[in-house]
Length: 141
Image (cartoon, rainbow, N blue to C red; front, side, top):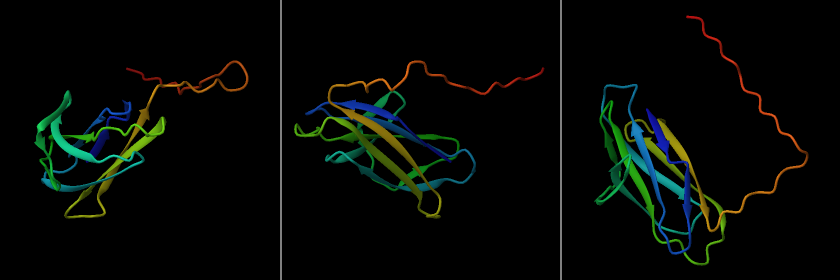
């Protein structure tokens, strides 16, 4: 099974934030049901809605537990209330955890980074050049 999250979201005071996720059962032929928990560094309430890869369906609120059929992608969207005007600008997070109802040791989590306010790039580090070393993979046919 896998849990995927949107990874990065942007928001400003008085706006809502929408972060898409899905659960995919790719290693079992048995339907499973999941509870869903979350923690957030933002002082807002989050609601869960259905939808698809392109966006939430606000007419489809989801109340856990969430049933998932093998091979399917069960999309769900975490939608925040409006971000309060006194929210500190900068980095925040939302961590979503799904846990099997039948086997509580089967759980996965996804962390979403949220930036609130105007983006301010971090200052460049010391020195000048930076090098990135990537592995080289050779494949013979």
